[in-house]
Image (cartoon, rainbow, N blue to C red; front, side):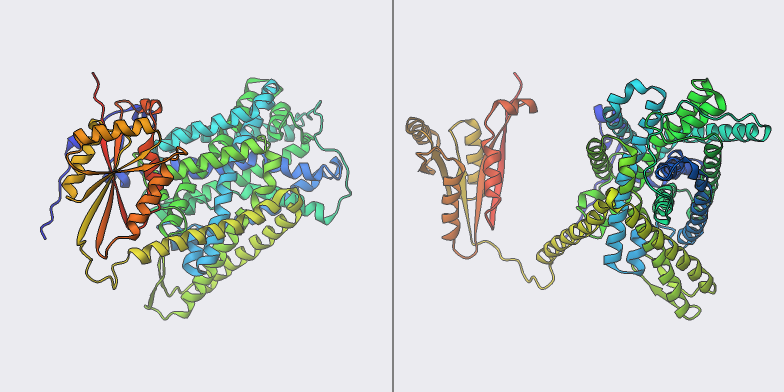
Length: 640
C-alpha cells in the first residue's frame, strides 16, 4: 500500500477571525518548545497562589482566635511560626520531587508511579477540588479587598467576581507564556507594596511611631473558651498559606531548561517571600491591634495604621493585594488543565481535555475550570470565609500522597543495586546512595502533612469540610467509571484476534423523505450511487400532504419504490424507527443497511431557527440502531 504525506504551506495558516482577535493568532505545534517561561515569569505564573494566601491567612487565624477573645490574638505569632516551619518541610520535600520528576511531578503522577492507581486518583481528585477552590477563593478575596476600599460596591460582589474569572479565562486562553508575562507586573507590584508596607511598619514599630488601628467593628464576637481544639482550628485556618506550593512541581514543563533547576530556584524564592510576608503581617497585625472585620481586611487595616486611611500608599497596598489575589487564580488556570490532561491521557477523564487549542493550551480544561469556579462563587456569594473550610483538606491530602509516594520511591531505590535500573510508569528508578536521607525528608513531610490534613478535616468538618470529604471519593468513583468505559471501548475496537473483516454481500439503502424537492433528489442520487437497492420512506402526518408527496414522487422518484407509513397521531420519529428496526431484524447475514437523511443547510447558521430540524431529530433517534450506517446528505441554499 502506497502512503503519502502532504506538506503544509503558508496557505494552511488559519484565517483571522474574532477568536484570533480575542485570544491571539493560532500557534503551530512546532512552537510548543518556545512557549516556556523564565524563573521570573514562572514566579508570577506558579507562585501567585501561594503568595496571595498571605493576604488572608493571618486574617483566618484571627477569625478563629476572636471566638475566645482578642486577648488571645498573641497566639497568632506562635501559630504562624509553626505554619512557616511546616512550609519549610514541604518546600524541602518538593525540591526532591522536582529533580526526581523533571517532566512533571505533581501528586497525581508521583502517586501513580509509586503507590498505584487508587491513591493517584485520590490525589487527582484532591488537586481538582483544590484548583477549583483556588480560583473561587482568590477571586473572592480579591473582590473583598476592593470592597474594603469602596464599601458601596458590596452588592456587586458576585458579578465582579464572575467578571474577573471571565477575564482570567480569556487571558489564559492566549497561552502560558503570554499570560505569565501579562501577570508578572501585578505579582511583583504586590510583593513591592507588601515589602514597602512591612519595612515602613517595622521602622515605625522600632521608633515607637506605629499607630493602632481604630474604629473597626469586629466581625466575630467572643463566644467560646480557649481550648486546644480552638487553637488547632486557628492553625488549620492559617495553613491556607501553604496552598499553591505544589503548583511548581505540576507545571515544571512550562519552565525553560534546565527545568528542574529553574523550578527549584523559583520554589525557594516563593517560600522565602511567602514566609517573610506572612510572619511580618502577623506580627504587625498584633501590634496595631487589628481585628477581623466584614468591611476592612487585615491588609487594609495594616495600610491604614502604617500609611493613613485613604492615603495613596494605602490604596496602592489594597490595589496590590487585590491584584495578587486575582492573579492567584492564574496558578490554577496554569495547572488544572495540565492535571486534567494527565488524567485524560490515562483514561480517567474525557479525552477532549488532552486537546491543545490554537494557542497551545488545554482549552477545554481552562473552560471547565472557569465554569466550576463561577458556580462556586455564585453559590457561596463570593465570601472567602465560607469557601476556606472547603479548601485545605484537598491541599494537604495531595501533599501527603505526594510525599508518601516519594518516600516509597526512595525506599525502592535503596533496594536496587548500584547500576541497576527499574522502569516505572512515569520515570525510571535507579539506586541512590543518599536514599536514606531523602526517605527521611519525604517521610517526615508526609507525616506532618497527614497530621495537618486530619486536624483540618476534624476542626473544619461542620463548617463545610464535610463537603470535600464527600466530593473527593465521588470524583474517584467518577474517574473509575470513565476509565471502565474507555477500557470497554478499547476492547471492542481492538484488532487483536479480530480476523479478516467481513465484506458486505448486499447493500440496502433506506432514504427518508419529508417532502419531494431538490434536496430530496440530491439525496436520491447519492443513495442510488451506493446501491441499486433503494427504498424511500415517508411518514405521513396528514392525508392531503401524503397525496402530494405520492404525486411528486411518481414524477421525480425515477422508479424507486416508496413506502408510506401512516401516522394518525402525528408522531414522526417513532414510526420511522419501528420500520427501520423491522427491516434491520429481517436482514440477511452480511447485509449492510444504510439510512440516508437529506439535510437542508441555509446560508447562515442563524437561519436554522426558521426551519424544522427534522434531519437532526432523525439522526438522534437512528443512532440507537446497531449495525446501521447513517449518512447525511446536505443541500446548501445559496445566497441570491
